[in-house]
Length: 479
Ligand code: G6P
Image (cartoon, rainbow, N blue to C red; front, side, top):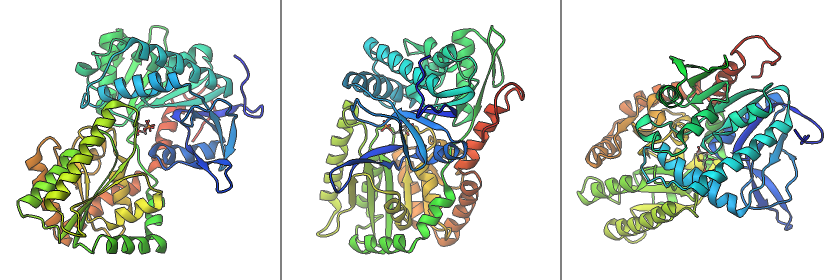
């Protein structure tokens, strides 16, 4: 192993994720710097990183080649560079053109290309080597998400002394879908390099264990896999969450409250505001949701003078063809709905293709009377939880797909099947018309759930489970 330490330091906790938790920014004077990115994964991991003086290995986006390890906001970051070919074949290709649609119920059609797979293997290898070079003896390495499923096994081969955890942020599909994958066995074996494999829901862990039994032939018992060499691998569910308190505090800020009023006025003071917030992704069900809303307008249930729909669509994976097609489809639909139902100065859909800082998002959430989260399949969906966290007056209605992981916890939402347009229309209308007593009763219960099960509890549960696996040995306890 070549020494590859940040300032000669090796770390007791190594986070390995496809993305670094920072984005490139251009300063006013033209120099370039970094800004902590607003994504869900970052908010989840950051507290654990800080508490344990860990290092985070990941790709900062782009194709810069001369990136050195650096400190940002008190975090040690070790950037992985990526060549244009790696971006195309590993990131856009195998990760987001093969695994992403396959793991999301084939909502989009997965493509299987051997060159993509080969690049996935070589990039996973590079991540594993980087982690091997930064981890102290007996350190804990926590590998994240579908882009890096081979890393646990590759890492264990170089560094058998490490304790390795893996967490999948997206759904793990049933055997019937997973077995389409030409490299199914290699992926399962990659994950089996970990001591603990975490999933959002128990169903994902069960799918995984069943596949390991069927496809790799190992003995399993409930959540444990027994390997021929005597090692055991645990599979379990750890539903991810958000910094609920932080979001509530943000929402209570006078600046955010002011912003809420400014946006409301700009929208023309409608009686009610519907809101959708998603990465622009075909798994999110944006198209069907807007159609459902438009039909309610067309049928006279909702008038554009009374209610508008604000849809924030965060640009995502724009080089991948399915995402371009989706963007065109949504552009066209929004234009059509506004043409049919809008009036001068009053569009029915306010469509924003942009990403916003957390404060602005908090203002949007505070503004929304009806929050509409209708993915066809989603590992968790943190937007639903963020909305709940900002509703400190126990008001506001959440319409939530039963196919989002969050639906397991947020039982008091108006739960919908996003494939059922009429069902969705009925739920939207009910949520729109619900009285205060009803929304308060539901929101209060959901807020209790989200505040009691926040991201700190999630990370602690995973880390405790990982470090408690055998109780003794050279590993230090990391929380
Ligand atoms: C999902 C995935 C993450 C990913 C994020 C943004 O939440 O689980 O691993 O980082 O989407 O997607 P991107 O392709 O921009 O990293």
